[in-house]
Length: 177
Ligand SMILES: [Zn+2]
Image (tube, rainbow, N blue to C red; front, side, top):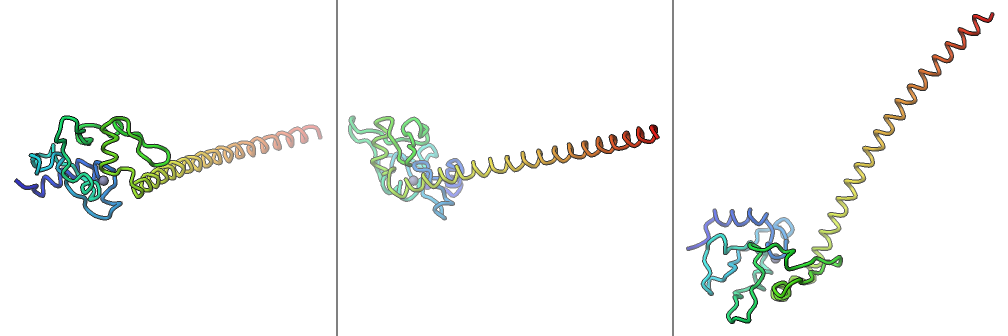
């Protein structure tokens, strides 16, 4: 059995077009990623969608055909079954900190703290922060616009009041003559 274009497309979409191990996207790498067999074909893995993981070439290369062969061997993190946050904590400096033995092993095997990946996470963080600030800036501009509108309508009301007072004053003056 081979991976049909339909299944490949399904795997890509399911992964949101990003490496399921390290989150690098197709857009970031300007190209399609690869399909990894969680349980390698050489170790009895099949082409069922449950065994297929969308993976960047680096993660795929480092993972290679790893599969536990003894009872003491650790399973690699399976992003299809467990969320990343169960095994990793992303630190402020862009490094991944392991929370479990699986996390420690996966970081080591897939080199999830490789320098370009740390830089990638930091850039992503900065972009998100930038977007957050820009959104806040937009909200502030909108708020100032509203305030301006209110001030301008208050000024109009004040003008009206002044006009009325002037008319009243003229009326009083006229009556006193
Ligand atoms: Zn990757």
